Length: 124
Image: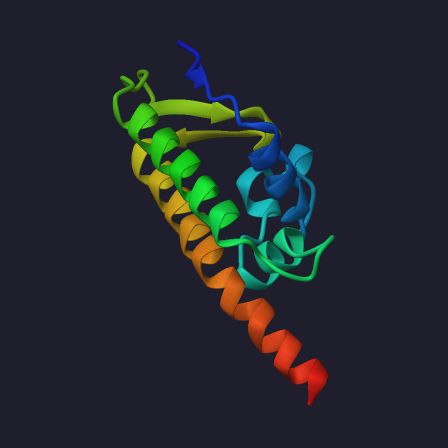
C-alpha cells in the first residue's frame, strides 16, 4: 500500500484550519473535527482588527485554488487517496478534498458579510 502525497499548507492556512477545529481534535476524528462554517472563518479572519480585508480574502482564495489544482494533478494510490494533510490528520480522495476545499472557499467568501452583520447587530 502506498502513502498519498503530503500536502503542505501555508502558515496562514494552517492557522485557519487550526482555528476551525471545533467539534473534536484532529488526532481523534480527522476532518470530522473541523467546522469550516462562515462563522468560525469570520471569527478567525477578523480576530485582531474586527474587519476582514478584501485582499486577505482574495489571497486565501488563490491559495486554495492552487491547492485544488495541485491535488487534481496527483495520481491516486490503490485506495483512491490522492493526498494527506497532517494538520487535519486526514488522507483524502479527490472528491472529498474538493468538497472540503469548496466548503472552505465558500466560508472565506461569506466571512466579510458575517462580520458586517455582527457589527450591525452590535451597534444596534
